Length: 354
Image (cartoon, rainbow, N blue to C red; front, side, top):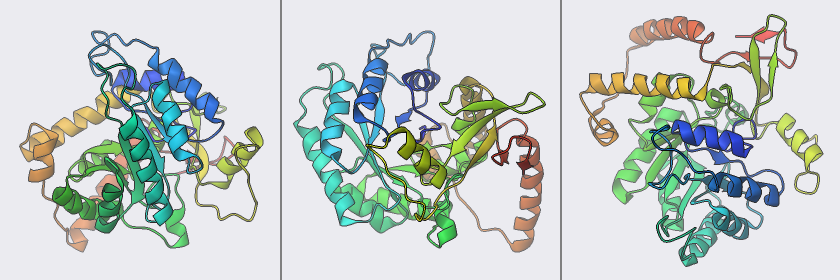
C-alpha cells in the first residue's frame, strides 16, 4: 500500500499509475474535501485493461479499488462522500490510535458504511473496508478491531520521515508487529505494517507478521509519485519527501489551504523533510520487491503469504553475529542507495547526507 502522504499520493494520475502496477494507493486526507472527492471520482471513471496490467488492483470489470483517508473533523460525512465518489476503502489515520475519540470516529464510520447499500453497483460489492491506526501493541489491535476496523495499521515512530521516536515515543517496528500478530491470530484482525521499510528485505520480513505493508519514502522515490522532482547540478533526479507531521509539511498546508489547515511555529516538529534520490519507475519497484519476496519465500519453503506468516521463524542473534550482519547490510545499503532512492539530502540540492 502507498501511504496517505502528500508527497506520495496526491493526484488521480499517481493513483492510477500505482493501481495499474498492483499497489493500493491511499489518497491523503489533507486539503479541501471537494478536491479529494473529485480525485476519487476521476480514478473511479478510469477503466483498467487487465490484460495489459495483470497485477492491477481492480475488480473483474477493470474498475479500480480505491482507498482514501479522512481527517477527524466530519470523518463519517467525508467518508460517505468519498464512498459515493467511488472509494471502497476508508482510512482513518492518527499518530495515536489509542484515544477514546479515535475509537468513536471508527465506530461512526463503521455505522455509516454499514448503511450504504451500494458503492457503485451490486457487482462492485457492498462491503466498505475500514482501516485505522496507528497502534503498536496487542491492546491497541484489540481496541481498534472492537471499534469496527477491518484493517489495523501498526507502527509508531518507525517511518523514514517520522520524528515521533525522537521525542521519546517509539516501539521498534518488529516488536510492534510481533505483538500485533499475536493479537490478530486471536481475533482475526488484518494487520498492516506501516513504517520502517528501507529495502525489499524489510518488506519481506514485515510480511512474516502482517497481511499487508504500507510504504512512504520508497514509493515517493519513484518517478510516478506525487513528490516534487528536481535535478542536481549533475543531472541526478531527486524527489522532495516530507513527513506528514513535519513542520515543513504543516507550513505548506496552511499556506496552500488556510481554510482547512493552520500552522503554529511552536508546534512540536514530529517529522523530517528533504530530498531523496529517485529510484526509477513504479513498475521496476514492484518487480524488485516482489522478486525479493519470492526468494525469501523459497528459502522458507512456502508458496503463499499465509504459510509465510505461520512458518517463518525469527531468531535473536548474538552481539557478534549482529555486528557482522549489520556490517554486511550497511555495505549493501550503501550500494543500494544509488539505485533504490535511499539517500536523504538537505534542503539545498548540492548537500547530501548519507
